[in-house]
Length: 201
Image 1 (cartoon, rainbow, N blue to C red):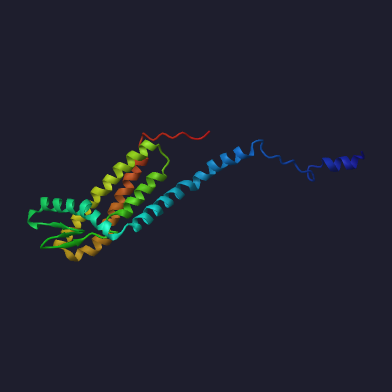
Image 2: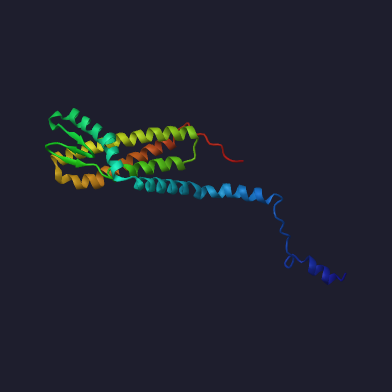
């Protein structure tokens, strides 16, 4: 073989290195998906869970929600208000808190469902063990329920004593406070010392 042809073939500028796929291509692609997919998996679970919860919430008929509001919120709120201020003599009538001083109606969207769905979706999307997620969900749902009972009781007193304050407190202050408490609870739960994850090898 002539020397110039041999130099041309051995010239690193013109020669190309062979590109051989990994011996186990399917496993390599799966491992790459698991590693790089975590960047979008958690946000996807969070958005999907929140959208699913809210869609299911909108499918519930108003008559069913009215009964749930009466038994789940109205009765307990009336008892709490009457315990704090017996002179109010509040009665829970369907989805309303009624007295001689106020008539507060509990309707869809005024039940704290949005804040609850945010917190539940965040816990479901967070990488943790099933037991910790279940514990966090149970405690979180109870916390949001109690906060909403207090919110409704507070809104009743605002309606009865300072009606002109109701739009600002009902529309801005109370929802923001509940969402903030839910975020703080999630941050506390997520940073708990009991969280132990096994990283994939």
